[in-house]
Length: 212
Ligand SMILES: Cc1cc2nc3c(=O)[nH]c(=O)nc-3n(C[C@H](O)[C@H](O)[C@H](O)COP(=O)(O)O)c2cc1C
Image 1 (cartoon, rainbow, N blue to C red):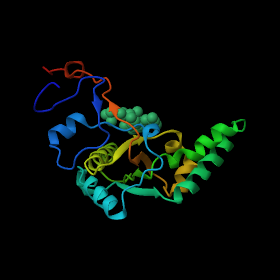
Image 2: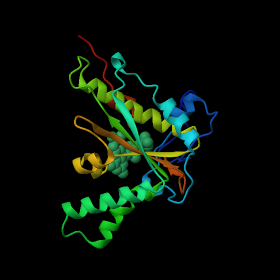
Image 3: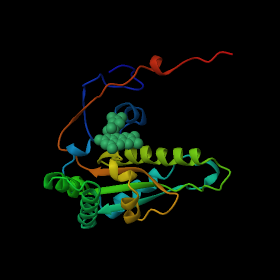
């Protein structure tokens, strides 16, 4: 552990997939890690409705230029995951006519990897004077906030896109309309194992001091 204020772990240090609710903000920022979806326990119980609403409510507190609220959530949980899996499998088959049964079943299983998937939708106002880029950044910040809010609620969380975030048919099936995009599919649940710290860049590698 380096700086006592932001105790960033060494590379490969073991990390827990979710945090204590009373963890310090500094430690949370220094030690949060995504749980890869393959490490999620597919049989874990997810958050109940009240807990999920509290998490989403906290996540919604993001910077948002001119208060446009250019984002929304779509929750996929319970039986709806099976239906989404069938849609993914059918679409995958249509896109890949030679796909093996095994790969089609993998597609069908995608939504089943965790108890809840929250799709964060970027819904920018394309006519507004606030640049769309700023509105999309706000949606990204919402995804990040959601990871933090989930982690301090005892949940493992992972932010993914995968191919289906970019597929128009899948997005239409999920309820996205023209001009909207998936900012992230955020899987929430419990992890099957500990995580390890991954390589991180040094500040000096990512920073220059500007001079005129
Ligand atoms: C916008 C975005 C899209 C991502 N899409 C995928 C994906 O499609 N598949 C995947 O395995 N991980 C995806 N990830 C997750 C990362 O690969 C990885 O889990 C994450 O960067 C780990 O960072 P952390 O340890 O700081 O949480 C995505 C992350 C972001 C920010």
